[in-house]
Amino acid sequence: RGFSDFIATLPPVPAPPPATPPDAARMLRGQALAQEHRCLNCHGADLSGGQQVPRIAQQREDYLQLTLREFSSGKRPGYTQAMGAALSGIPVADLDTLAYYIARFPGAAPSTPPKPSGK
Image 1: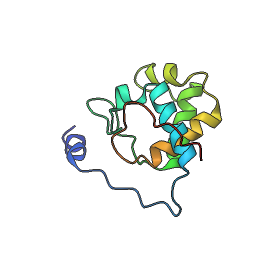
Image 2: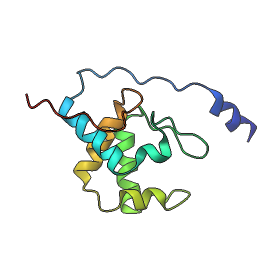
Image 3: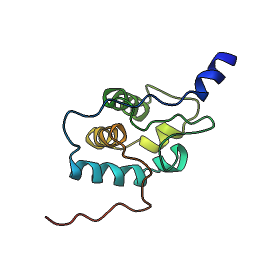
Image 4: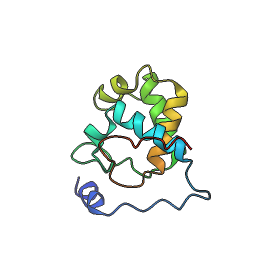
């Protein structure tokens, strides 16, 4: 228990910068999905977690994809049924977009997604 408490005090290791800039449309869609499925309610506005909720911001995309898919399918039950309930019925493509967004999370999310410029 003492070791895990110590680990919890360490700052997160930043993810390496992406090789290419994030796709703006995919980031907007991911942000909308995060708000629609209430990710920010439990994981926080900056997705840093807290209490019994893990930090998910800027985790590896492949890890996030696998985790979201397993919660959605019921393969990964978690400590509660909250994640399964939040993700059930979401198409895999949307889960992948959500993982893309979270892996590239820029910081504190605004309360509403920005409107596309139409360009």
